[in-house]
Image 1 (spheres, rainbow over the protein chains, first blue to last red):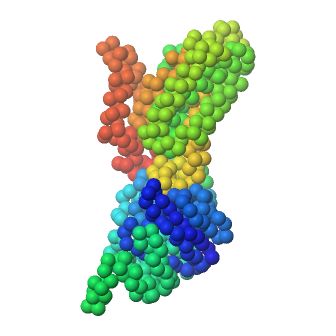
Image 2 (image 1 turned 180 degrees about the vertical axis):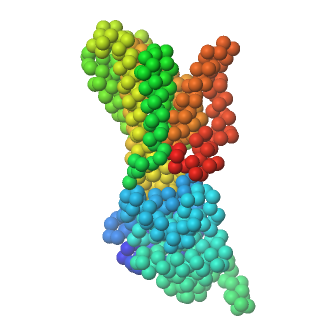
Image 3 (image 1 turned 90 degrees about the horizontal axis):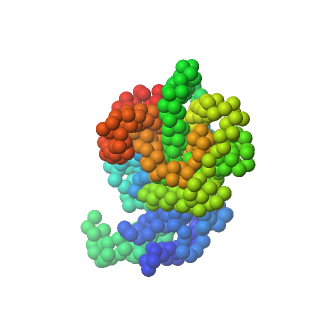
Length: 248
Length: 322
């Protein structure tokens, strides 16, 4: 298991953002994380990569308890992530952004090595023609790819993808899905939050569903899609949902 | 790898060296004094730029390192009769140490909070020294005139100080260039642009910020010793003048923060302007008003400063203007 999350809870004052979340992620798999808005998906990412300390529970990454570690310590150990709300380093060029990932992530590359890695990663994600542009000048789709490029440049063991498909048009989604598949073929394990269901269903080996900070379902994509609780969480009323599904 | 063949660094150093050597060749005391102030500003502004321009932390009270260095050095020179080189070293170390300790404590604050605390630190150090007997309390420290004899008399000592300052200024520029073009510097820029993202990407932000602060404090500490050695005395009111801190900010912002050449251009330009204002009878009392208005205009209209603006307008200049 590359990642074990054990009974993790997170509270913000009186708000229970995560409650007793437990799952295991075997190496090489893609695990999808879904749930309605505000379910706690991004919070779970933030707890896993050390942005917020967990209020209770344990996180084990590659056999090591990493529950109390800072984000940069996790980055050095081989965990990389993208952000749902993109965080480009605006006044640096696209290439420099990616070099930061290569220099300071697991790879810890030297500057010149980081330059080579950046060129490869940018080419892989189709950003090479924008390499010398300031990151602030990219459009949203490109910024999402930049997030991914920075994460990949670190050459991580585990990649957390936070809604990399949101806001993209269908052809951009297809390109991104292909990219994710190709990343997985390189042996990188992926945990991804996604709202674009058809893409998630196609990509994931397993899916976990969160609702109000609770884990309400887990299983293969097809099973989860049929789960009553899941349908209710998404649509409120299972009967209405059934009706909707039947008319399709 | 850092490229020593970067087309931008050598011309910069050559220009500074040429301007610096001019008073020596002309053997002119008057021009030496003008260039002295200019070199001093370049060294201080380039150092400030490491924490301000590269890391994005506004150090409002940066003059504290200049003052503390000066005090440490003069104390050693007068009370311990230590040689100048030792005083210079101690001044740099004292400032570096203060920055290190402060960095651990206050660099977790972001934005305006950090800026405010740096003003507080400057005032606190001043208040401490006013009450610190070994440093002469409110009177300060005056050097015995005999000290200069070891350096061939007061006139010779002035020249010696000038050579040393020229060397230190070149060193400050080289340091600024090396930091900017290193992996460490890339981490600083990442912090400046988005500290949270930098941390997630693996930049060890607490350490990087602390070392940036230390690097930006050492040269001001050494330069402080030189300045007050030349001056012959140091007083608390003089050593920790907030005005000078703000003028340094104006220089960095005017030239272009986050670039190597910006603080040099800004410092030279600002000192030139200041000289003009001080010698114009009507304007001589308005020097600081001009500094304030200038800062306002820069931040409103050309936040990237002169060099930043040029680099944006003419991307081809990027290599030539580091």
